[in-house]
Amino acid sequence: MKLRKLAVFLLASVVSCSVLFTPVSARDISNDTIPIKVEEYDHKTDQTTEKTIYINPSETSPAISDSPTAGTYGLIGTTDRRTKVDPTEAPYDGIAYLDLLYKSAPTKRVGTGFLVSPNVIVTAAHNLKYTNDEWVKSYTVYIGNQERTVKKTFVPVDWSANNHLVKDDYAVIILDEYVTDATQFTLSTAAAGTGEYTVAGYCFWDKGFNLYKHSGTVSAMTDSEGSPVYRYQIDQIGGQSGGPVYNRSNKVIGINAYEIGGKQKPLVSGVHTSYRENCSCNEAVRITSTIKGFFDYYVSQYQ
Image 1 (cartoon, rainbow, N blue to C red):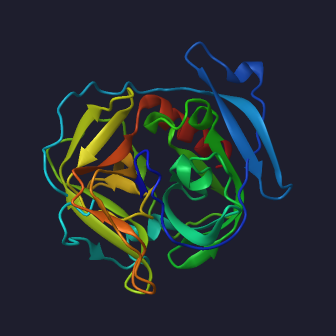
Image 2 (tube, rainbow, N blue to C red):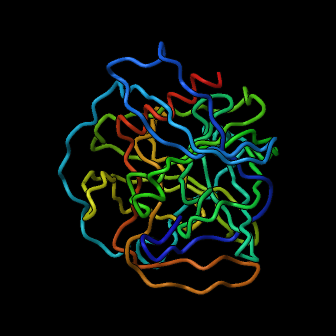
């Protein structure tokens, strides 16, 4: 997970980052489509290009204005309430561990993603293109503790062009293989209910890279920059960025991404990365009709 605007990232590991695109023909464009500019990196050719895709935002995002409950929680509080889970068991077998390496950072970092089809992974843009707009030098994807081969990655141009607004912090990873024996999550623009939602993701903790979860209620709001977000008193640690915020039906309403407030705690070598405690809340990129349309496009293109 990343500290909002102060860019606190997490420790991790390895392989290659990418971006490339297929132009859309006239017959693919209807009156309902909207254009999105994307950066594409192709792992096989090692080339980055900028193209325009046309998506169909088939659903309308609900208008919700309730605000989060005030509290002292990132860790929310000083006690870690998360539970370690087995990455080979459903639904955690559909959550991806991203082992990241940047040219400007000698240490490796960890991020999270999740499957929405056998070869399409949803994640946060800042995992693949950091806030200084540096593409990840290399990365490896693991699902269910098995290494997976990456084909291409795509990040919306607006992530850099709009100076890293929360609403643009989403990206897609296309695998060069199909993962047919893992959970596939469903993206939803439906309003969050009063029930429990789970945030799950990877981080460096307890002398290893482990998958953790914690659950609670969420609240929808619009942040000070106009981005639709979900906020919650659910514990998370840096590295869980890009992980799903989902219900018991594995429907994802947000992409976990930020800590709000709190106090930085230092790295303890071999035990954990740096993290924050006493955060006021944690935050996710809300799945809007545009974001869902973006991922639906790639699911259809690479099925």
